[in-house]
Length: 114
Length: 113
Image (cartoon, rainbow over all chains, first blue to last red; front, side, top):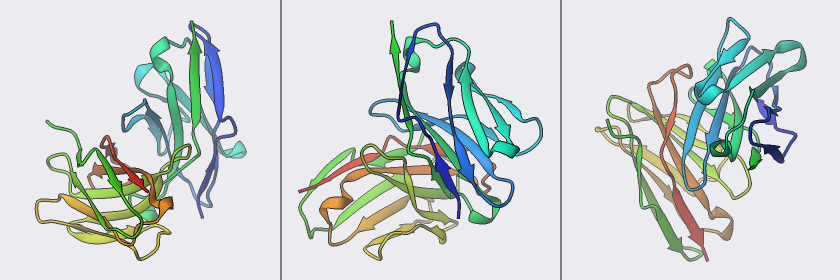
């Protein structure tokens, strides 16, 4: 069975500082990996996804993520955080054999200090 | 193009009642998936429908059911509501493959009293 762990429930970062959100997954085969962002009162928006190929993936809003098979990780990074990045971030894993089912982690809430 | 729409936006029910939630996918998308997001947790997969057939089911009791209509819109039905069914219910639309981006609607917030 697939599972996703986001070890950090909350992260506080100063505006302009760098941000890294951790994600560890458990899945037997090569997973499909996703990062979504959810702002208050809104649905989920896809930031980036990884299926194969280059392990460093670029997404929207200046985010990137790196797939590390040896560590079963898919950490999300942004070099310089803006106040508008305050939101909840979810890592998710999918699999070809599971249709469109996504298994989400518990999320990391990001607070941005001025 | 309009995004994924869901109705109603908010709903209050009492225990034992029935509820129907609706979702209209993005034009051209034939797959609709439903997720339950309890406060403070990540979304949990409930169902996927494609071409009006159930293609996936999560670990939810039989009180939860869904269907997809010829225009690809979908309904999620929950019978005999429990307090624990209080959550944000999200609908996602996409083309069939997992490699295609799933677009989420704003959700329906259900409160069961």
